[in-house]
Amino acid sequence: MRCPRCSGLEDRVIQSRISRDGSSIRRRRECIRCSYRFTTYEKVEETMPMVVKKDGRREAFDPNKVTAGIITACEKRPVSIEDIDAVKDTILHDIQSKWDREVPSTYIGEKVMEALHRLDPVAYVRFASVYREFKDVKEFMEEIKGFDKGGS
Image 1 (tube, helix red, strand yellow):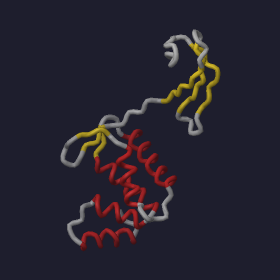
Image 2 (tube, helix red, strand yellow; image 1 turned 135 degrees about the vertical axis):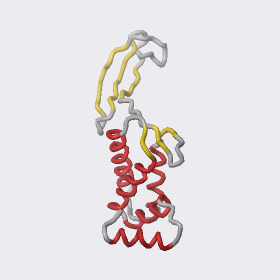
Image 3 (tube, helix red, strand yellow; image 1 turned 60 degrees about the vertical axis):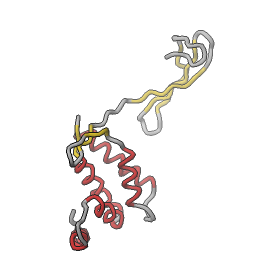
Image 4 (cartoon, one colour; image 1 turned 180 degrees about the horizontal axis):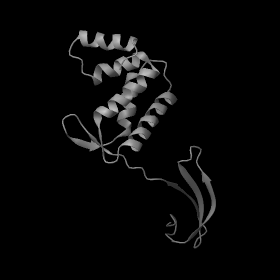
């Protein structure tokens, strides 16, 4: 690790601490050359698969898009940011564990709908109305009826 003050390449680790969620390690270091102390973080580099859109285009997976979609659906609903983060984290973990290189956007959308179905019925219907691209009110009403029966 290069010292941020003198660019020296030799240091010693003074203290190591695992983060609360266990996803990273914080290390306090001291440069051997100039005695400057600095902090580094070490974490696993997570790679996400490419998203294959409905029209066949491919784009890099962006977790912020998942979060933004959930937040929009939950707007003015009694859903905490912790719940939204938990849904996002669950979906990301699911994608990482099941898909290596590419994931269909439809899979991501279905996972968001499943999570919102359990979390908040109004948020679910909001998301479904955009995601499913209902053509008319009849399709929308069928979706709501399916929700009442535990469908989708």
